[in-house]
Image 1 (cartoon, helix red, strand yellow):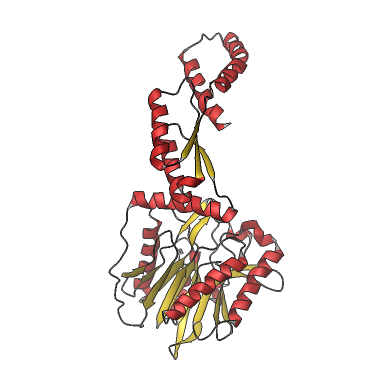
Image 2 (cartoon, rainbow, N blue to C red):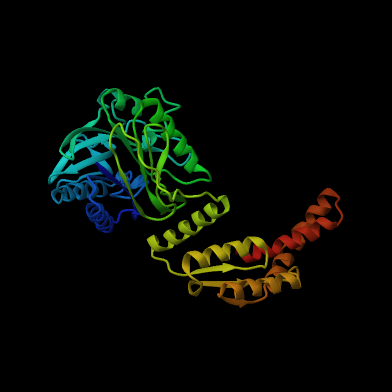
Length: 394
């Protein structure tokens, strides 16, 4: 059987746009003769929707999208993340299994993270561990038991409930984890280690499809992956871009490893994450142009470089704002940075603003010195220098 992992980049709350993207990837999977295509956690709405989940119209729209998509399905099975709710309006982080023009099954997330950037217990009810069981489906004319879990269900080291293990104990022949797992440096290796650990312990292939894209302060890096029953990573999706990962699964047999297994470069990874985060923030919020300051130092140089890579030089405008504390070298470097990046730069002195701040502070600083018996010192010069970035920031 051929399984496709569709790591896509949804936009929060853009149900129509997200559905168009999902349908495009479904068509790509069909053209590749896939028997099943899996999409990330909460791909219908975007992740994390946070307090939008208190808006019933938002939640209803996401479920309506699933119902409408189900009507369009054929023999290929579709697994995708959405927000489910019951008659008492209790919400569940869920995965829908669609096929044959209908919804075949729904799986609810069991382990709800409430640390770091996550606060899922604020919104969702967890699945009852007694309800953890594989989904029975027919793939390639063969009855198949598919284990489906959602993101944190894999990260079970600090939980008593071991979702993956229970799925296998109850008959799963392979497990698909649909995730919206945020990026940080080296996260790929942590995910890979967990998948390998579960694959070897249970003797089954483990598949994970991960969201890609920027959402406010979060970046999702994709890199969906497949680990075979021996613990070998045999497929890995692109990082920081949409991708369709294809794998042939023949239960009980080895899976050939792709020759283009991605390499790792920490600096490139960090840069790419920054670029994607900025590009998606602008695209998804409707902004087009950025204005930033260039001082000639390394901080503003890197910021400008990332902005140009994310938005294009024509959409970035730089300001050089020197004062008497700006060195000649710094001013020259600022001009060279703008020239090398191909961006326009406006130069104007902020000396009058700095002098105004200084004048405003003279009297209170004098009173402080008198009160504590202090003399003017070199610290005053440091304080004066700090007025320059303060003026720039304002």
